[in-house]
Amino acid sequence: MAFFNLFGPNLQLPKLLRGLNVSSKYDSSLPEEYDDTTREVDIVLYAHPIGSSVSSGSRGSGFVSAAQKTFAHWILVFEFCDQTVRAIEGVNENDFLLPSFSKCRDESWTRVKFIATRQMSPKDVRSLAVNNALNGCPYSLLNANCHKWINLVLEDLGLDEIPSTIDNEIKWKTTALYATMAHPLAGAAVLAVQQLYNASKGDPTPVLPLL
Image 1 (cartoon, one colour):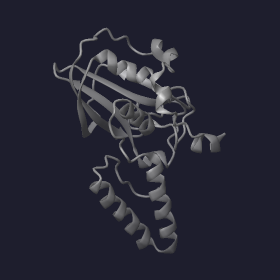
Image 2 (tube, one colour; image 1 turned 45 degrees about the vertical axis):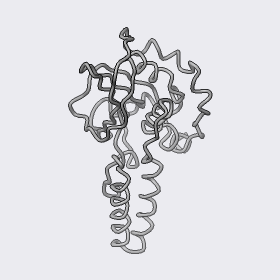
Image 3 (tube, rainbow, N blue to C red; image 1 turned 120 degrees about the vertical axis):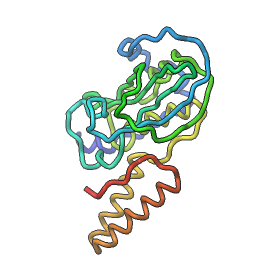
Image 4 (cartoon, one colour; image 1 turned 120 degrees about the horizontal axis):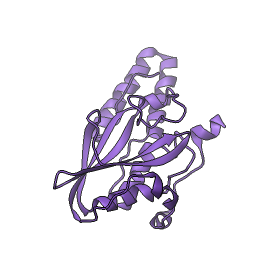
């Protein structure tokens, strides 16, 4: 079971299927939204370290693995022109990836990347959370995590995905681990290269020491 939860199945569904109301059963679990007025909204990526708060995406077991510590939890925040805010995210609830929708922005979150400006309503934002194709999937470190969940939202909005997900991070850390076995300085060099690479890509994922 642990092996399945780590790698999981390939849960990327065709975009065609994501137009369906595949997650309607989660509708009642989220706060209601009655504001359907379309207006200009800035879409911004926020993040905070895994394990830093109750909504960190590790609410289920309370256990945060070493691999999870290498990346930040992502939240997509919609900042409307009238100063109202809506936030959506995918969270790990008892080892299942579930949607979260809120009408505020937590002060502990770090603003890391402006993504785009669109014409939407708060009700549209809630629908994005309710209908995410990964809702209800077993949490998987590689295929069903908060990064993948956010990237599905961006794709549904016709926006480019954010490239740095946990699978990329694991590849870097694995390379660094093998390099360290050869020589400690080699491992440090790999992490230094990763930091430069991430910076060149505008990558919001922090580079942390190998755990």
